[in-house]
Image (tube, rainbow, N blue to C red; front, side):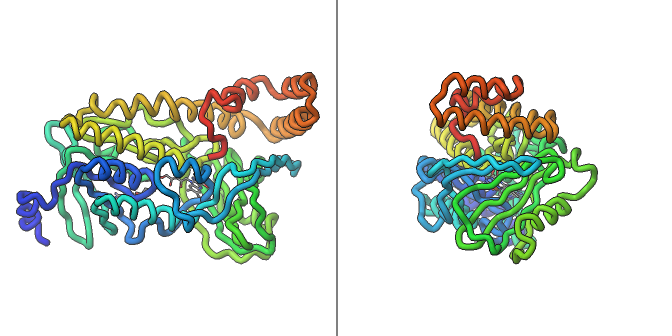
Length: 414
Ligand SMILES: Cc1cc2nc3c(=O)[nH]c(=O)nc-3n(C[C@H](O)[C@H](O)[C@H](O)COP(=O)(O)OP(=O)(O)OC[C@H]3O[C@@H](n4cnc5c(N)ncnc54)[C@H](O)[C@@H]3O)c2cc1C
């Protein structure tokens, strides 16, 4: 279609929506679903030809029940339930904690596609291979999106736009929200999806230490059978110009030197505070685009669902009232700061200790402390538990208590 024809179709309402959501990841699809359920005319635009593909994720997330708060769960989305976690210190000391049903391993491609299908069932128009390349503005307020699709440019109007375009988000920048990343606000990640001789159990494995993953951690997550996601995230400023792939090869040699690597993927994950401003006139950001992932683990699926849900609901109400100003959308920003934003600040404080302040020796002491603490607790000895807790560094206890005591968000891993 030519530009003039597009102009005509905009005049006759073909490309006029109540809401446009950019990016069909978890945040975008749930936001679109909430808006469409409220009866609004919604476009969900995804630049990739195939939603959820290629997967750039280790696929661990919260429980089935937690996901079901946002959308009915399809069995095909779940690869495995997680029954515990294993933490390995720099020197190889293993601390293992059974945690039946703490979360699930997803089939992320099916999950992302399934969420977009839910939005489509609620009558969202879903377009793939449709890339947002700019915003339309009127009197400083966002009023639509410019797209590039199959080599042609076209425009669509909307009363509100939700930028859910992930870690590489541009929508926020176009809208004048300060959404860029400093390099120290990201984990630089690389992961191999592999088949191993090692049979999967249902335990997530985390490895720490300056020679394993400087400024981050390595993971081995089971997908079922003999399939694993094995990867790591590093802080590039700590890795002394050694590429993450070098650390991954070293880690794979330790995990299973004969593993068959099916695919290698690279990407970045969040290790920052949530953005201060996530709404403006006619615009809201959600998910990684708003820096809303958990800065301790880099995990962002549950937070993306939470953010998409809240942004979608608040935008739907604002549309119904006929007012989509920054003030009208600010309930989303306020609510986020009060809940997950606050707990993310606490996770960041702990991340700064574990990944920045402490060296390998300090981490060893924490492993010793954990061993003692949980042994004492299992033995029922309150005094022994307290004594063990006192052996942790004071700043670690101060950072961990609000999280463990549940003042913070209920999700510790992801
Ligand atoms: C290696 C790695 C492993 C990870 N492992 C985990 C894990 O185990 N558990 C976990 O919870 N989190 C994990 N994460 C983080 C998790 O993947 C993200 O936090 C999550 O996907 C964020 O969801 P989102 O909807 O905000 O963004 P995304 O899922 O990134 O979705 C954004 C979408 O927007 C699209 N898009 C971007 N720009 C445009 C545009 N201009 N126009 C149209 N569409 C656009 C993208 O193609 C994408 O589909 C991992 C990340 C990495 C890099």
